[in-house]
Length: 481
Image (cartoon, rainbow, N blue to C red; front, top):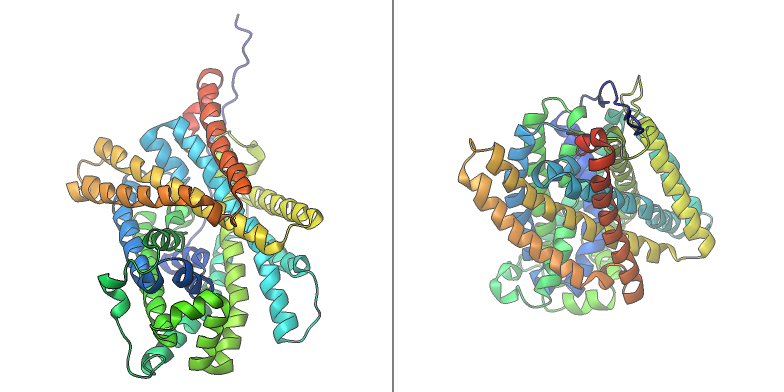
């Protein structure tokens, strides 16, 4: 008689419940994108350190690469109706070992942006309260705790409530961005002579670093890929998910590309590089005040806070669902895959993620790490990790479609996926080469963090190998299979 323990099999796989339509899912995903933070905070930095005057083109090229990826991605999401996001898609295409390694890395990536954004939120809210409203000058973690508590409560409840909050905040963000773009356009830019489209010309594509510009731009599209993660909480996912995926990419391409073009024009093509290099944040503040007055500038300052909270909440919900799916497969503790009877939410995973985020930030506080340095490192990890996971998914998609998607055209099965692999692979190489820059400039820190990322992938791969021999039931479920 064998002494090996019989693996206990669950009676059924847990499933989340929800009723999100197109707009709810769209706003939930775009909120993670933080369009106002990108326009106000990222675009000036991209002009100074990235592609220079060619920044608008960087956004267009990045959007085209991701749109090519989305063609096969959405086809696969239709014929493989599994929850789990990239974790399940990579598993279906490339096997359980690579799938589990990628799933753990993705969990790490989304958790990093969640935990890191408390620090940024604490800083910007503190600046608003003390600098603009003349309120008390308190440490960043006091203000950051507000972001943590609100996201913990909303993340515990049904996903539709989070979607409604994110919808309100995102609509306000869009109003600010559209108002700014409109005012710059109708006033004809800095010289009031009309908007120049010269930055779109190939003569300006390589004014700065084309490679860094593309890398930065790819990072600004983060979030479109999580549409499949909410499959169980969406009405008619086969139709809604593809539409939302394309809509998110299209919106980001138009808003970011157009805003970058108009920002450059708002200062002047001959002056913008010098100004943003000297003071990236100040140059955008000056542009906002010049075309929208103090009203638009102050409104933007307020909305950066709500935009940051939207990122925190969206990242919390995404991370909780990755935790839920890994638990449902028996990789993480089983309790994490509990579904709330009333809210249909992964409430235990939500509490666990909130607790982990609190612990990480307490470590930052007690060790005296600067808030912005911590935020920069966490965002750098996320940028590299998510780009890497998307690249691996880009390889998995055509392999899966070759086996199961013969009914689709060669364009969606081969041509567009191949183009996306080339583009995403180039971006991933650039991210690896420039990883120290992404995490704050320290080569030692970059080496440690890169070793951590690779180590987590290897851990997932090794766990799958072990489970294949010792826990065949768990192995069979990897990737929500």
